[in-house]
Image (cartoon, rainbow, N blue to C red; front, side, top):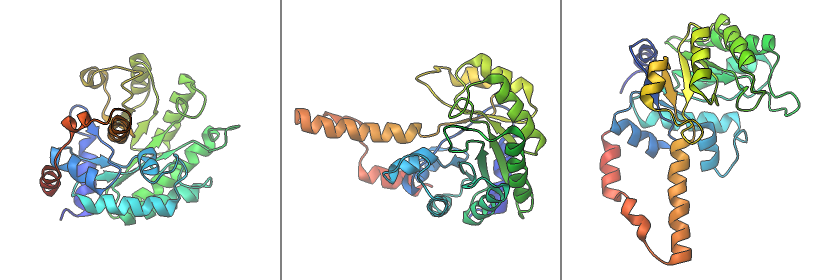
Length: 274
């Protein structure tokens, strides 16, 4: 069993090596084992994917539910595990710090704190308040007995105001607050991604959005993206297949969907490799 110290060091090293790496997002122990067996180097939770697997919407998961989920994924494989920790499950900076500590106890070696307030009338914290929240999370991460990679997220293009200049100003403030990785989910163009990367001096995570931004992995890597995460993309694909199959049975009475199925024995054998 790989120790948390080894996982933390391995995850940090991925951000220092040459080129871009992929960070897929499992939603349960089985999907984590499959991704590990297929050869990925690290995993990250998906807030939206996990919530939907519980029959809930994004941001309807409690911190206790999140920690139980993290523990299951951390125990499923030996890979480094990071997590979408939303806004730290509270407005005060100490909530962010406590969430980092609890996540580390559950098995994380990385995690993200975002600046989304949950209030549609003021969707993002003031930049100074947001930086204080990141700073508290960083201090909690640095106090751990192993390397913990802290990612700070600017939610402008997801849930705030899609203003690139403000996004960059926020990421620069989070960089100064000590974040290891910077992340602005929802960037839609290669030019915007390049502007972010050239404005900061930390590794940048980009979210894969293939429908609205059909960029190749090579293009993203050449632009300087260090980490490409998939968010709920794999979950949506899996549940999309389930929906398609169930509809085919009801509407057509046929089993054409099974041509894409994997046998139970093959799945078990694949997961065993993890």
